[in-house]
Image 1 (cartoon, rainbow, N blue to C red):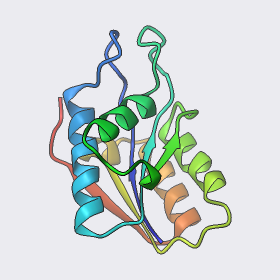
Image 2 (cartoon, rainbow, N blue to C red; image 1 turned 180 degrees about the horizontal axis):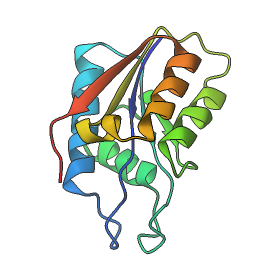
Image 3 (cartoon, rainbow, N blue to C red; image 1 turned 90 degrees about the vertical axis):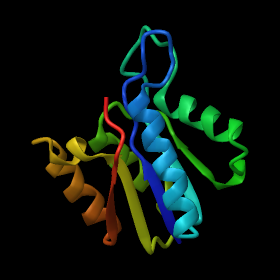
Image 4 (cartoon, rainbow, N blue to C red; image 1 turned 30 degrees about the horizontal axis):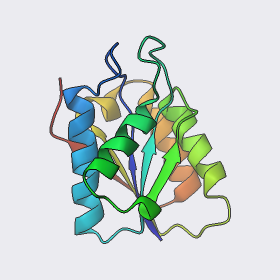
Amino acid sequence: MNIVVVLGKRLNDDGSMRKELIGRIESGIQVFNENKADYLCVTGGMPNKKAALTEASQMYAYLIEKDFPEEKIIYEDRSLTTWGNAMRLKKLLKDETIDRIFLVSSKYHFHRKNFGTCDKIFKKRFKNVCIVNCEVEE
């Protein structure tokens, strides 16, 4: 099974997605289609309490609006950090055989000091992780 995982980005105070997050989800759709992936996973909780929505819920709504097949979406909306995304996703997929994870985020996100730990967590848990840099950044 191949899964595309789109990492969240803090929402605006009004609950709207930032340009960067829209770029990530668009990249995720492209990677999903190009690689004939089985699922697309949207991740992210509610780090911005003013938004009153989770990052995952906004990405999910965006996918549905784009007529993306609902049965192909995995939804992880509890985590507030990338490390948490990795841990929650592993729990959600505990009995599944994962061939490849396509991890989609912005280029700078993968180079942050604290992301190295998350990268190791994804690679340790899923073995075959392909990093996909999104071109759109704020």
